[in-house]
Amino acid sequence: MALRISLLGLNQTAVSIGLALQKNTAQLERVGSDADLIAEQKALHLKAIDRIIHNLHAAVEKADVVILCLPVDEIRSTLEAIAPSLKAGAVVLDTSPLSNTVFNWAKNLLPEERYLISFTPALNPSFLTDTDESLDKASPDYFQRGLIVITAPPDTHADALKLAGDLAEMIGGKPFYADPFEADGLMAMVDLLPKLTAAGMMRAAMNQPGWREGRKLAGRSFVEVTEPLLHLNEQKLLGQTAIFNSDNAIRLLDALIGELEDFREMLLNQDDQALHQALTSAQQQRIQWWQDRLEGMWDVPSSPSILPTSGQLIGRLFGLGKRPREQGKGNKPSR
Image (cartoon, rainbow, N blue to C red):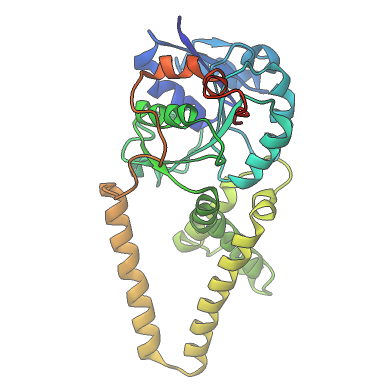
């Protein structure tokens, strides 16, 4: 019996997951569903999925694993829509950069014995400089040499957590198990802060009297620093990621403002040595970070604290939803 994995939201990440799983199609059935009919057909044409099931209810009702590849402002409504259709033991993996907020939604919306886990990929560095997010640029190598941040509520079934780690390895990534609060802080730093910074930069420039002429001259530096505005995490209601992760966003904005104030002070004092040292240090750290990122030799925890010691992926999955009750009548199944 094949394991059914349903991909909801057929963006570049979802199609790359499907392509990476193609070598396992003897064990897996890949189902794709998207509001965009063209995206569904494209994913099928690329052989990233085995079949299309457009209706959300039908797409998830027999799924063992549901992978959400959705804009942040569509996650809650999608969880609400699919909740009644998820079978007991189903594992829902969310690829968005939010953990705690989505966990709270799942706690209120999903029935017991349905497990939501955050599954946020950090991509293969070879793809980071390609800004084309079309499905044609999806690749089975999308997650090679990259980490996949895996985090879950504390009462999550250990088998569900291990399944997420197995799937991360199946698509070529390295599992990075994190606490939900740690994950939110890290994603705010490396994903949210650049986007807010890009917005601030764009607004500061376009509100200058010289913008009408300056826009004609803006080159590579301006393009690169404002590029994150084209990759926001929402479809319609922009900024929800920042609102839902506001504590971390505010902390990081304060840190950025502090750095900019330091630069301002150096310029006011015409302190060329301090400015030189600050820029040199930042430049060297950027060079070192990129070298490390290309190598991908990170020292990360190889497993969470509690995991099953044996069992194959499919066997573990089909056991979900039953074991908590077998462990004791008084035990409430984890979500």
